[in-house]
Amino acid sequence: MNNNRKHYRELQSSDEIHGYFAKCASVVSALKSLCKLSDAEQVWGCTTSAELDVVSHYVDLLGNMMRLLLLKYAYTSYLSDDMQQKLAIDVSNGGMPYGVEVRRLENDFADLCNKDVPWHDYRGKIVDYILVNKSIPRHLQNEMAQQTYRHAVKQGRFMKTFEAPTVSAIGTPDSNGVKYAFIHWALYDTSRCMPVIYIMVAEDSSRSGLVKDDVLKETLSATCESYSQSALKLLTVATGIDEKLAFLHPKQLMRISLGSFSSSDFPEKENSISPLLQGFSENPSEDWVFEWKVEILRSLGSETNKDGMFSGGKRTEVFDVNRAEHGANLSGASEVLRRVVVPHAVYQSLQQGDHPFAETPIYVVGKSGHVALHM
Image 1 (spheres, rainbow, N blue to C red):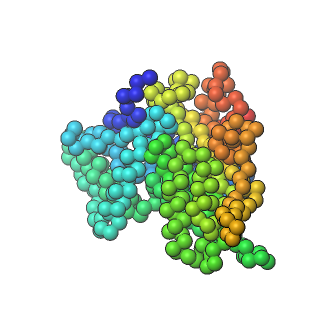
Image 2: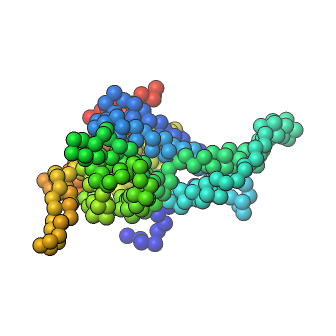
Image 3: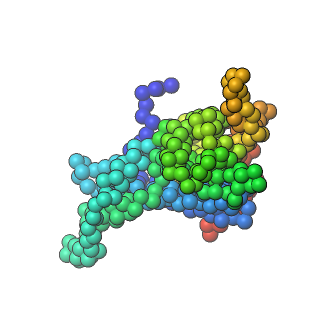
């Protein structure tokens, strides 16, 4: 294996960039549709509508991120070489934008959030240019796209390298005064170039209540950020939170990894299924397969371990790892679900030969955009 090869590819031509984002738009549209199905909670491994709303929220942020990158790069390929910016996409894992692209969006947001962004009417200039020069003014299109990009990125509504936890109370304290919190956070995992969503239900033993205590929220955010990389077993994440935060006791932790993203355009991708997608490159919006994984870890209860004769002991959660199931044991989880969504034409192609999704529920996007399950 060549360890010196690049793990990313730079898209340079306009056709490559628009084709790539056509796929991305189709994937995001399919994920949004999957959040609206009558059995959507089952699709995503959720048990409540609140959990499903969280998934839908982060899918929207992912879609916004893709739209911003399209605005940023749509017309740069027409500029001179010294002005060009090139979109980098990951080809070692999932075909998603390379991590540096998300960091650049964050840097632009930080730079623009406190600045006024002027608005100019480029449409009139573009029409005038076409009438006079009988050609398309790519430089003006790029300026208009960059202006739209700056206004949009300033809003900050896109998937970032870390989305701080959002906390809400679940009901009211029970008769024993026990409080429960519903917590979710997300990140664009730059090590694997994929969005990862975390949803947690936890017992809150803090005196003031996590929802009302900003200091505890900051402590929670720092801990979640340090334990959120998707390479960590889910058990490691839950145990780390349980050990670091004495006031919080995870009862269920869910992790949804959005990826990988396969296409015949990513032949460099390891374990690629791109050969199965040959023949769809003429219609970029149909040349893809998108996989995601849901890992769920549940608590069996808690126990108190005394450090000494006079110590009150430390309370820790006992988590239910399914050692009998290979995937769950490998993930440090109670349950692992895998799902795939594909365009209808790709699904028909997969049925004509062997493919790696024989044991995986496959959701198929019809020509009308409707999504249905095909086992």
